[in-house]
Length: 123
Image 1 (cartoon, rainbow, N blue to C red):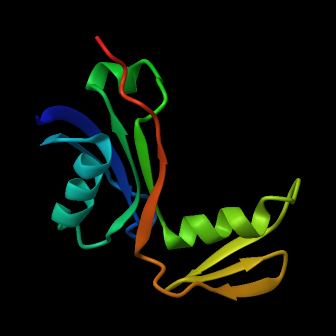
Image 2: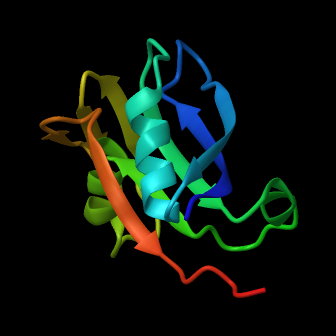
């Protein structure tokens, strides 16, 4: 049975800041709702990150998302910097990050994947 979920996503910066996109999407699961949002997005800059919530109210109350999607660029940035307390960062565009003076080329940087899924609360 389908349920309505609230999705909030951010685009890649264009050119100085990202746009925030909000949608209500019906799907069988939070993951399916989030992937439907990603697949249907027609924003020219593409999606940087997105979260799926049980409702808009849950989002506004800062509850944990039911599922989360990140682009490969952000996933790799987090992987590269996970053991660093502080670092210098430059995004040169087109999937090229410079972290602490070392250049990293991220393949398929605008693609991404689901990272988390929490059980939907039973009512």
